[in-house]
Amino acid sequence: MDGTGRLRVADVDRERVAARLAQAHAEGRLTLREYDERVRAAHGAVVVADLAPLTADLPDLPDAAPPRDRAPRRPGPSPLRAAVAVWAAVSALNVVIWLAVVAGTAEPVAPWWIWVAGPWGLVLAVGALAGRVGLPLPGPCGSAPLRR
Image (cartoon, rainbow, N blue to C red; front, side, top):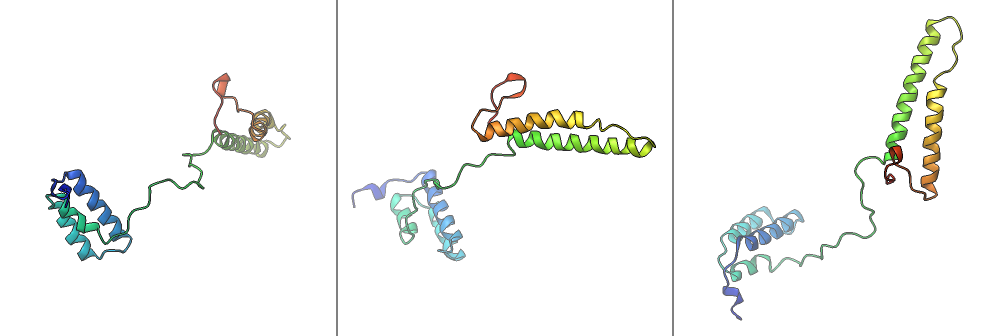
């Protein structure tokens, strides 16, 4: 033995082995009894040689490299989608109000809601098309471009 097996272990070493044992138990490699016995032994380990046999019969862990084929997830909807959702909700509310006015009066009422929904929808459509061709989407009031 080269003497490293007689080195005293730190709490971080015990926790690393306990975490590996927990993973092996979760994978079905250890029964609950085996897991319990080995975790107790890991927390009672004094020297490195006490920890080595606890994971000797377990396969080595693969490198913790992130999968390359997955795109990173973005939290929540994009700013453009959020703007379209707000536009749709406001436009629907205006149409409902207009319908209530039409039903309340016996006369035809001009569809004034088009002046709310139309220009705003046009701006959103132009922004969506600009985003599809790769142009940066301008932020509100000339601020920094929005990220898609």
